[in-house]
Length: 217
Image 1: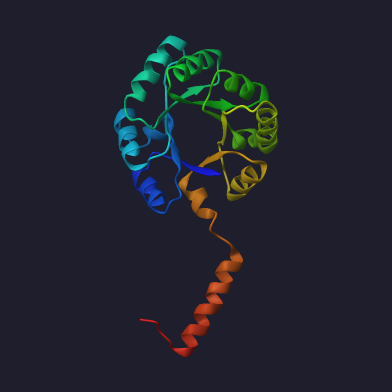
Image 2: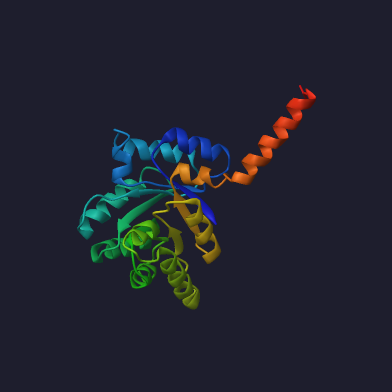
């Protein structure tokens, strides 16, 4: 499973990228707004750091305006993925931009039917939102599984990009189901390294070393 990091924090992206933990980046207007910088400026800097797909989202709602914005965003770098909402106008935009040869990430997916439409429209990525479904007492992972089955049934090439990831368990479950990609905040990716038994074992090792007074350097 590929890891995308869901942030516009340049320092966090650089740290994870240097560790080989970043296969791409997802952003949205809300995330970039927190940086206090322009969408174009921040996106260009991210693309200079990360070789994989970098999702940059349009801000209009009408197809013709989204298409124009998408083409403008795609000029930033070759690894730009234009991010569009899963609306009828968003699907129209996806079809045009994908035919133009651009990568397209169709976001805010909450049903298998929506995911099927996105694949038919030529989406590179479909972004089902796990956490937001969990918030309303629906099973976000069930949606990932349904999309996986449908895409496999018909050999759709659209990649499932599990989004709205809230925990390390979400990452594990998405991987078990077979999501192609998971996008998560830096803190969630780092949390995957944590385990109480690792901490206890390390504490015991350090006590033993301290008792002997041994050093390697």
